Image (cartoon, rainbow, N blue to C red; front, side, top):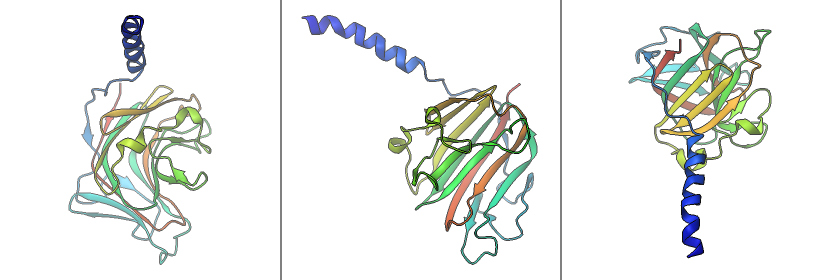
Length: 210
């Protein structure tokens, strides 16, 4: 009987923990990728790190590229402050990519949501935040049970005020607070230098939060 009396208390505790997760935000998304070419995007790379085919944006690094060790960044032509990014992402093997937003006060460093294996930690940190290091508060351990390798996975990444939130396949996996990135910046996609890899994106859309 005593264990039965504890059930309501356990249920309340569970509800409280679930309540900490933020619901998927409602936002007015605008397509950021037309599925045909890189209109609206820019890169300093002279090699074909970024290609478009059949509605898919692919970022690939090959050891035959002159800039293989340097890698490449692809940025939106437009800058954003409070923003939500939504896309589908697919990859196989050990890759290192990410989605970048915002800049620090000096306008030099951005905050990255990691996709794939961290070069420094040698482990998959998809959904976690990189700020020159991986703060433990920004880790996303649930991704290991949600991410489907080799299949399309849905990512939603929100930057609102000093809070950065990630949902993978509809479930919140990270909610990180950092006041060190107050400046608007382009949204960036990464192909890491020195890594033979390929990452694919489709249905990429962006919503500004007013």
